[in-house]
Amino acid sequence: MSVSIIIPVYKVEKFIRRCLLSVIAQDYKDIEIIIVDDCTPDKSIQVAIDTLKESDANYKIIVHEQNKGLSGARNTGIKNASGDFLYFLDSDDELHDSTCISSLLSVQEQTGADFVSGNYQRVYNGHIYVSKRYSNQLVIKGNNNIIEAFANGSIPITAWNKLISKEFIIKAGLYFKEGIINEDELWTFNTIINAHVVALSGKTTYNYYMNENSIMSSSTSSRILSAIEVYKELAVCFSKHFKQEKHLSAHINRFAFFRHLEIISLNEPMSTKRNLYKRLREYQKNINIKKDMKGHIMHAHLLFPPFIGFRIMQFTALLYNRRKK
Image (tube, rainbow, N blue to C red):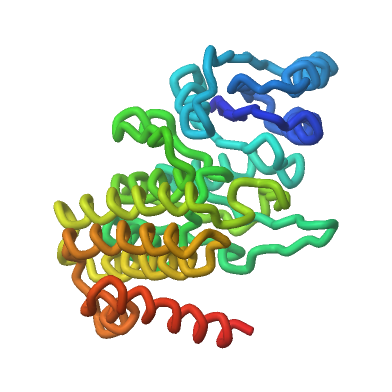
């Protein structure tokens, strides 16, 4: 079985060598490295070429004529991949050790999973935090059970660190929505609603480097706008196909609730925060998602006019942050 590792590249001159060396070091050798140059303005691609030439790695470099963002770069990678399985690796991260791909493939061969997720560790300022949530091996069969596991947080929402069948991706049309920032949440949602067997290896296979300047390190109005669009798509899909799935309903309600908290916490003018609140609120009012008792409590603000609802969410955010501390 061959594996295509898809690596979008944009402004990662400092990190791309580390990323590629972790791929070159894999003990599984039937690997195709696909580098997507998303119009990076620095020397990332030259560093990548110099690194790859030090080995006998099988690689190809696809060059975008215009910047398409992470989603567009991943889609380009999918279309140009020849492997039986695909693996998304962000260019500022790395594979954890030399056995990552072989271990994920081994689990896939044993289970026949549509995709296999490994565990991961976060690296920040020299400190390492290993995720405990995905540290146990788990095989989930049946679409309803997979959806429930996803809604309960048992399946990672990230696109990276998943070994996924290319045939499965093509048949289900699992391409990334371009023009948004929160692409992983939506892509993983679309992936799990089409999956029939999912496996978690339990083994740490990915080092996720948290950079202060990364897109996901802080909330911005543009990131919230993307999240609101993701909510809209999740909610529309749910209302069409999964009206009776209470776990998924609870997940979508939680997604909206935490986006409201992010809106309140934004370092933006009050008018911007009010407009974002109203936008998400409109979608929630127009797309009826069934709520359990907890959901009704989290979204009690929807029962009031927008001005009062916003004040209620301000108070809720204050209480939530105090509780976290």
